[in-house]
Image (cartoon, rainbow, N blue to C red; front, side, top):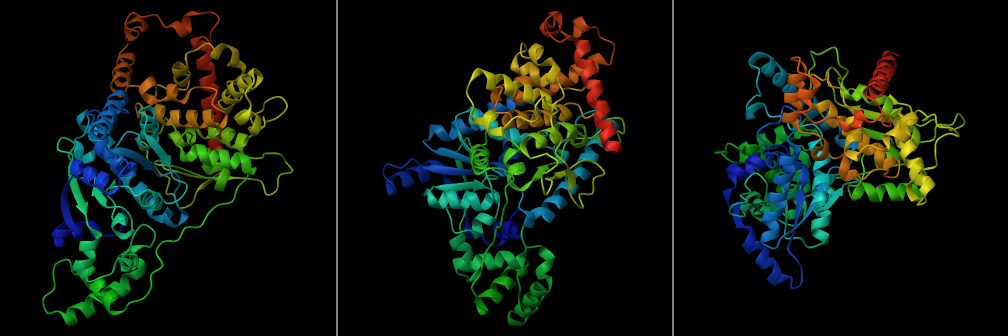
Length: 537
């Protein structure tokens, strides 16, 4: 992330730019300098995921309740010293960063393949050197933080830019991240996640002033330095010839060159040939719907209250990162294909699907799964829900408040998953059990398939005007990786239903007035059949 090679350069070549700081003292100095203002730290959520997820078990799909507790400890450590936290998560992938995004996703696919090879060879979870974070961790982390009362935002443009802008606009005490873009932007101090010690409340602050001093640059030269060195927006090979020229010229000037001469050489070139820099540019977005719906979707997206909806309505592009899936398992479809019919219904709810609609909308899906080269997006056409009278009006679903609308929300939600004829029965289930209706225990990928299914469920819930409380659909309410794994092994070893239920009768399948196991199994088989047929077509 950030500028190619800059973090290592600063760590190793410019030690005076790496300043040990006590966060308590920083907060106190901020209070003195800004009376009446609470010291605020802007947290780059994506950069913190590996530090946050310290649960021992990860390959089974995630220890979600334990993870929620770890997040609570993280927040509590800052609250105890009077520091307010504001969290930002990526909400979109900018098209000018798509190439870099694809490269990273394909690399992670190779890592996941090694994980499954290790499991088959050793029959146990790999060590930390092969750690792959549980599927959906970034998605569910923002909901978890909101449940802990934290201000949490999903971005509508490049996350680093929004973080830097927020920190500067609100005079924040710092940005907690691990991304050298925050050395380039003229914003609040950049604090290291990697060096963070919660027991001491200390970390390292990277000083852009000291960096500029060492490189003999001005602050406004840094964006040009970032472009020539290469970053997520400007490919590294684009300025390869210029960097080679800089290095050659630098060697002519200085008989002794440091090991890290690339950055020094480029900096010398810039300082000798001053020119204004333009920085990063961002350009978006057309909409497919009315302004009030789009504005409501944007606000919910930014407040991290929904998934997928704004991305579909605004520019018709949806991404899904890597999932722990075995590329050698040919029996089970990848989650991206398994849940595609439900997503097509979701798009059909959000976008116009009438024959007279011109041009016909289509959603570009950048979904990562084994053997998908990601050369181009998959184009998914919206599919009508098939409800009597056609699709319901989004305005009624989102803004209506009477009893009839509540029933409409529920029936629409179930129609996304082809379960509309079970509306009356399924309404009697606890919300957390609603999520379990979609599980397929054949998953060789253990819990990853289920957890990814929750993301589709939550997206449908938000698109249908929230017929269910979102918090009740979270994985820490519905799923435990180790428990799932143990039950999976027991089920395949011939254990009885009574053993699997640990002597507790399953309430949902005991009542004649509620859907039976046969009902749900039949619906699941129809769903899997329709998915397979759709994929073959």
